[in-house]
Length: 104
Picture 1 (tube, rainbow, N blue to C red):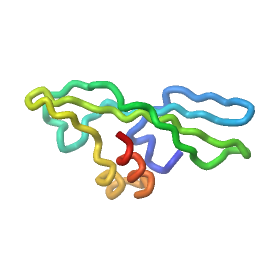
Picture 2: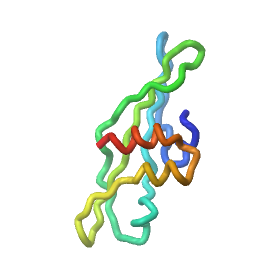
Picture 3: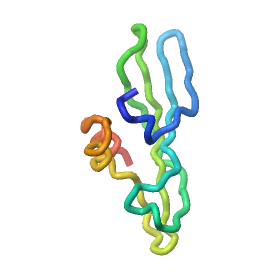
Picture 4: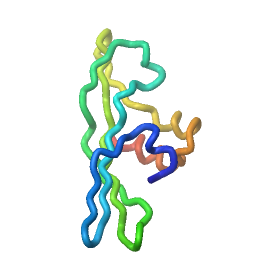
């Protein structure tokens, strides 16, 4: 796994096939720090994206990632985690954070 990813995501499932390894990750249901005091509702996940990570035992590793989104009750604003800020304060690489930020 990319370093630091398990701080924000849970592995919900894994599969091993003859030619690939799959890990399914869902973002934790914890509001981004800027909104943690606001009343909100989880509005599920953005569409799943799949990225390829470093191979294990000569098999490609595919990460199936689902990012969470929330709606703030008072304003109706939809919020998502800012991956640029995460990259500065945790060991997630800036390249991986840019990738996560770029998926909608």
